[in-house]
Image 1 (cartoon, rainbow, N blue to C red):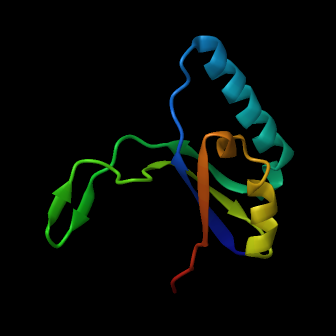
Image 2 (cartoon, one colour):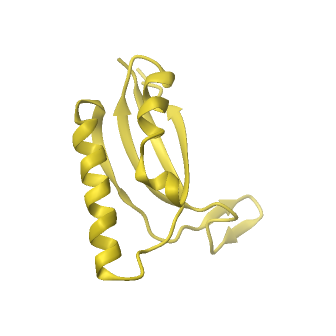
Length: 103
């Protein structure tokens, strides 16, 4: 069964403690509901830098990465079905790609 990376884009920090607690509970519920698929729950990430042959940009671009998770599924469609219920979709997008095993 292949692994798939969920790259979370966009979103924002909660404005209040109560908003943060509500969001965390929604994430916990989503992860518990789909727990068997999670290989690594992942984490949020800080501000990124974009490195290219012409230099370094000090931001993540128009749609910066905000976190990641790794899930397993028989097909990409299986994990897309899980992504469709993710609370992150209320504020951002999720990019999904199969993790190619080398060697």
